[in-house]
Every structure is written in C-alpha cells, then in structure tokens.
Length: 99
Image (cartoon, rainbow, N blue to C red; front, side):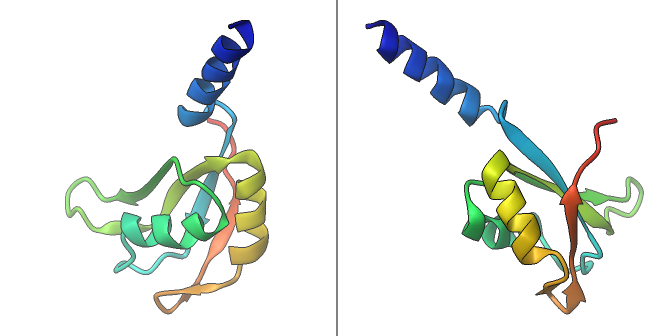
C-alpha cells in the first residue's frame, strides 16, 4: 500500500512539472503558434506547457516563447532542435535561466 501511495505521489509531481526543465525558444516566426511548439517539441517527450510571449498592446508575438518538458526530454529537444528551421526561421533553443 505504501509503494502505491508513493508511486501516486511521484506521478502527481511529474504531472505538475516539478521535475521539468523550462526551455526558452527564440527566433520564432510571428506566425508560429503555441500548438506548433507543442507539436515540434512533443516529438522528444511530453510537453507540459508551451507559451509564446506576446506584446500587451498589439497581441503580436515577440518572437520567443517557453516550453516546459521533463528533464531528459528537454535536453534531447535542445540537442535536436537548436538551429533547426521552423516556419522559415532557425530556432534558438536553450534552458531558461531562473528569474
């Protein structure tokens, strides 16, 4: 019973992104959507979240965003996608620094 509870607690932590890396993705085309990021990064593991930063006034993309993934998958995505083309632009993918 204790093992089952512990497994459930670990699964809950993983699903909240507690053991996740936050990646910053820059040089995005203004046409790139959060769904595009989820699709591309999803090839390397589960994507907890994908967010494109937009201008508050115009609502237009600022050309960068963040993707949150499990630790191992995040490193694999960095290795595979840094410098690769998405919507006509070469991506810059790196681990985001904490604020």
